[in-house]
Image 1 (tube, each protein chain N blue to C red):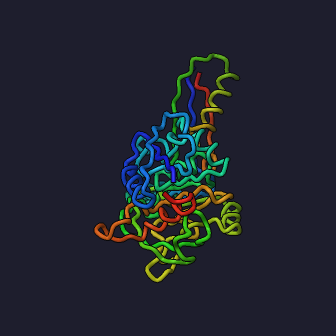
Image 2: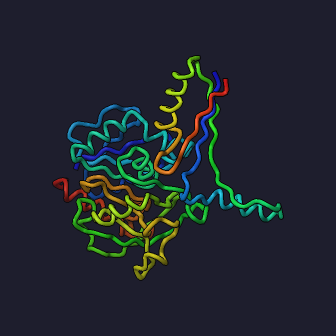
Image 3: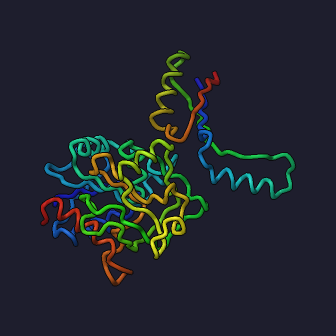
Length: 231
Length: 80
């Protein structure tokens, strides 16, 4: 799998996701700077990592979404290429228009940094084939603006088209009780219409070692590796 | 030429920050505060002097970056 990880000024999770991708695929991802205009030839997957691009000034992800490299990401996505945005990367994807909706301040106003259960809503995508449908996984969340909001029409469409990737839930799988930030329908991650772009607030890249709390995040990177023809 | 762009949340969009400010104001015992919605103000200096040109420039600025049109509205004022 040939993957490219974009660093924006203020990204801070690129090292974690590079490690997770290398661990799963055996191939070292290529680091891309936000001012680059092109992705490496033959890129299968582009990752927008977590962090605080541009210090979250104006709105989270807003300034980064106007970076030169985002035109290349847009055309990669339009050609069906895989795009993964995690946390701030998800915020950048919604600001860039690659995914619908917006991530507002958490309903409780606090920055939340904790372990969180998620329900894998479907397992028949290139991001989740290593999981089972409705599997409950435990990963980390760390965000102040993860409250997913969109107009009623958009939410109805996302649900009807089965484009919710993950929902927050509690240990037993209850999505209402397990909602940490007020997101509509407990949405933690969504796909684009063609299922080749995934944005999610939680951090699967931080859960790939038992030593640091679990390996439930491995499935995402294993799925991506499998879907792009392995190492 | 000076201008001001005011960005506010659309009606119906939950504003937890506004709610917290509203709660704080009410906790002071200030009578008559009903609700608070928080927004942003951008004071912008322009090199152009034609009002129509300025308006178009500010509209583009607001829609391209200053406001997220999914949840926000904007208002342009030319201050002269």
